Image (cartoon, rainbow, N blue to C red; front, side, top):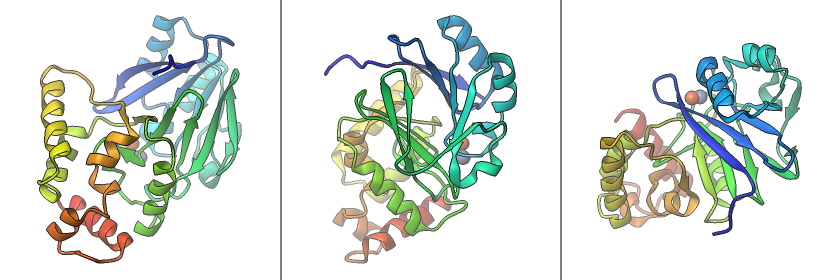
Length: 258
Ligand code: ZN
Ligand code: FE
């Protein structure tokens, strides 16, 4: 695979969030994806020596935008966030929605509206670099809880993400993978790719290592929320032959009660 033109520095925040600095070495521009926790973000900037250009918010939850004000004050960066929940994003300078772009040097991120977890959630796809920041919409082996939308909306959002190239590297906002794996195995135990991924996840976590990022191809093969067309999954949740969105909705409902 080609060397990515962007550098991503990943670090832990709060109990199970990830913070990400994204750096374009050509222009020197740097973005932080969300602001889960101020201290670790400032430390990451200090360690890398990178100067913050932008905060790129995915959605308004406190573990994503709670540090906006202080990070902006301390770095002088600009705050970019979702148009459809702009009023809930602290210190917002520029609002983006479906089809908009934001550039980090010559590297352009396309914005997708991916409502469902929140009404205005957006994702950032750096197409040339082959990486996407998907916030709380698509997790490794999971998807976000549907707090402000409908299963129909969430499924449409996931389908937008599924249209990216299969080798796209996915950075989600939380380390939820091990518990997601337990649920995934409960609804599709026949999936060999899932069984082996689950073993790898246990090994990574036992070694204290992150399971994030993953790839779209791996999620398509193993993530139950991207697999409502799987006959095994449908049969296991008593939805064989049901409309795809109904299979998705039932999978999400079961996870909420798992
Ligand atoms: Zn959230
Ligand atoms: Fe979150």
